[in-house]
Figure: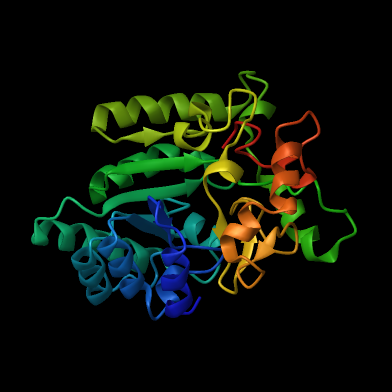
Length: 302
């Protein structure tokens, strides 16, 4: 997204409270990321992002801390190089770990309370055996929180013959550790592993969030008790090229787009338009949009 479009978008939203600078790509690749953070902070907004941590150099860490970034969440889907690099093909465990430690050090050196530094772990079959080690790693690095979540989507709304989603749908089926699927039997390692991780985190003083804790309150409280997710009422997701979607969890702009920033009336026109109103009605009904039914947040297993 060009910096000028970002500024124009903020101009449209005088009541905005928070900006998350991420999509399906890597935020640290954006040449204007620090300038975007600074612009958001100039307007009194909370701002942060998720990153794979690969490009989190000392210079970038210093610039982001100085700009006032409120949170930086780093994906760490394994406690060992073998697991991490199997899941995150092309990444290097040692490099990301060094970058994380340096970010913690840069923040401490500057005496800043921000950014909040969080390890994000997508819990799946390939890494569930490393939960205890992930807790120990979080304690050793000195991050503020360890956030464990399930896979975002099971892609059950995609046609099994859709070539674009065959691989990721198969991966989700193989790796999913949906809380609602666990039968609780002694042979199932997931409940025991999460219980052990919780106890270890308490002992080591690590703030730990597990999928069984349910969806964050700030994502479910605004649209009424009967609606599992309130994002279409309180937030919106704008892609780099101006497409407007109900949230980031739909995982791709080929699945649902509710309008475009270049449409008449801009974002406000899209927000109040027929497509958005229809999407909200369906989400609040007994027959939600197909793209929502496989969402882990909608199913309360995020």
